[in-house]
Amino acid sequence: MEAITHEVREVFDRLGFGDAVTEITAYQGTTSRIAVHIRGDARMLIGEHGANLAALEHILRKIVQKKFGVEQRFSLDLNDYRMRRMEDLKQDVKSAAKEVRLYRRPVPLNPMSSFERRVVHLLLEEYPDITTESIGQDEERRVVIKPFP
Image (cartoon, rainbow, N blue to C red; front, side):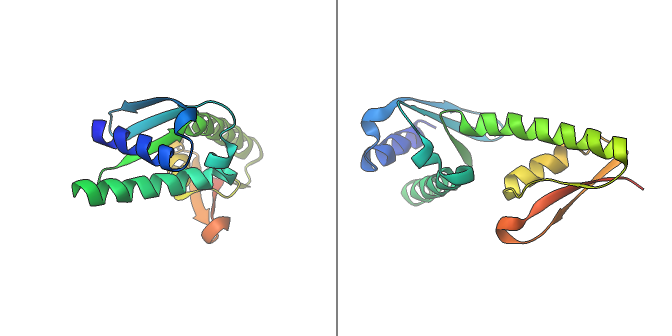
């Protein structure tokens, strides 16, 4: 993880954000997580719905793979954007599940990434009276939460 952290620092330096980086922390787990904190506004680096952050993560994975010859899975988080996004997603899912149970009708969620859709499916696995389905294509792909027949 130390080598990956070093590569993250280098990429931020090359992008001109090296001086803004205040901390880079690596967390080991089932999926490794690298948290980067920068001073000031990180919206440009995060992008709309995290698109720039996802692209940056992809580039870093490719750099690590090429440099070290291994495919290392990790999640890049910037100023806790992804952590906050997961908390918001969990709240949205709980609210939608409550609505499905109350009105017994499907509730479509907003379009989201494949990772976020997977999180939704996993969160609702434990609800025996609810089922989920991914519908749509590309940027419009979303999860629909439905009452189980």
